[in-house]
Image 1 (cartoon, rainbow, N blue to C red):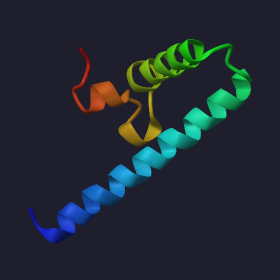
Image 2 (spheres, rainbow, N blue to C red):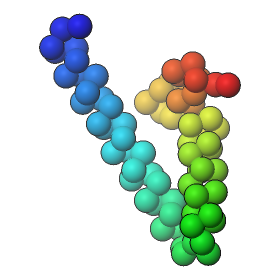
Image 3 (spheres, helix red, strand yellow):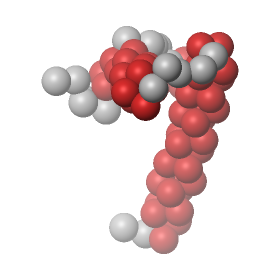
Image 4 (tube, helix red, strand yellow):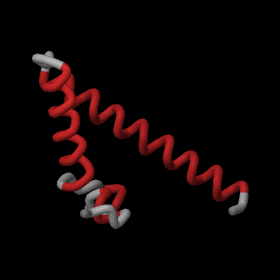
Length: 73
């Protein structure tokens, strides 16, 4: 793999992680406080499932990440 391609992939991955973090923070802020660690874990897990398997993304031609990257199980 060329250095330029590797750098491009690394940059894309960093941007994707940042977008995911911002979306998760916004979602958590709308929910308020969690009742317990178990509640927080369940809520974040449910949100992650929605974000990756149900929510279409404009940058992925309105596919979910699971569809776009063939991760659907």
